[in-house]
Image (cartoon, rainbow, N blue to C red; front, top):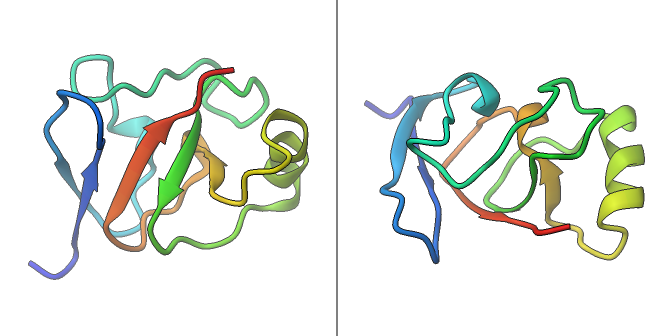
Length: 96
């Protein structure tokens, strides 16, 4: 069971969900099970901007460019559709 990662949403009424390692959040999060909203799911619209607490790989250059625009002073900001799940995560939606 060590390949399951707990994804939690502190400050919300949404219960944590468990996902396999290296799954894409945008394929598993819905309006029923998380506060995260998705638009394009390709990293260009910024709808899924979140703050992530947990160890994940750094953003790719295209995602980093969006983050520099949307959340320039937040080193924990990520686009949920681009996150590679590599461990337990806490996710907070960043309102734009």
